[in-house]
Image 1 (cartoon, one colour):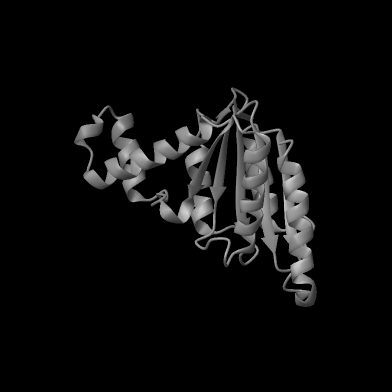
Image 2 (spheres, one colour):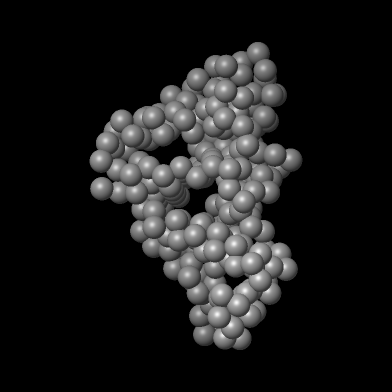
Length: 207
């Protein structure tokens, strides 16, 4: 039995979001093909994903100096707890899916904040004695689902960022799938989405 983490980076559901339509299709096909696997879904806009701000920086500094966690300010404790829980959730998964729209050539800011809970020196990557970065995440399978209004073929900054960041932490089994061009060619938007859903559904069966 494997554990799959599905990270949904859109505030809307599939009734209004194309990226969430792709995600729903994937999850449905995956659960049908892998009935014994555990699927955990993380809706980033339902969670107060902490940004790396003054509370987190001060909390880490105090802990590094030996101050007990219970002595931290309540806001520092709350943010550190959620930050660690999200990192633990990712590390506990055998496979993961990150689903998002392309917004202004980038990922939604809530997704960037989640990525920061995953990329942690000493846990998911480390620096070697000669200064090189080494990814510590081994054996996970990753999938990126993204919808684009235009045509990018995986060459957009958001896809490049996610590909690089997961490669940085050591995820070598990583693939991306897209539905794109719906705004560029609105008359064919429904057909584009239908074709993408078929591809995602087929892929989910063997993921």
